Amino acid sequence: MSSTASYAEKLALAKQRSHEGVVAGAKAAAVATVASAIPTMISVRTLPWARANLNPVAQAVIVSTAAGLAYFIVGEKTVVASARRSSFGNSPA
Image 1: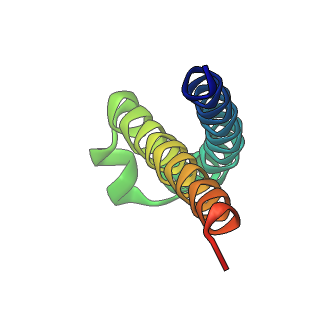
Image 2: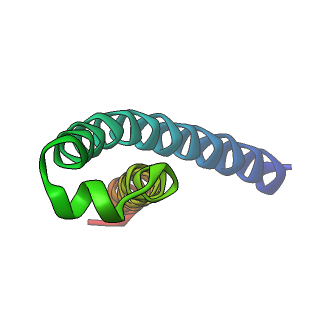
């Protein structure tokens, strides 16, 4: 029975760590969206090259790519960091 309880504890811990990664990734994506949208919009309005070559689809791709990358990178780093903390905490001295 202890292996079942241990498995349930590990599963609950994994779900918690995964949720932490999702929350951290969502926060990073929100920041990256703003951080990439503002310069993109300013450059499209002021630079002749950007005005001529970056249509609305290209602008959306730039912003969504930055947000997506931030989400996955920060989420993965958060999950890996928490896994390291829990594995070092459970290792014998």
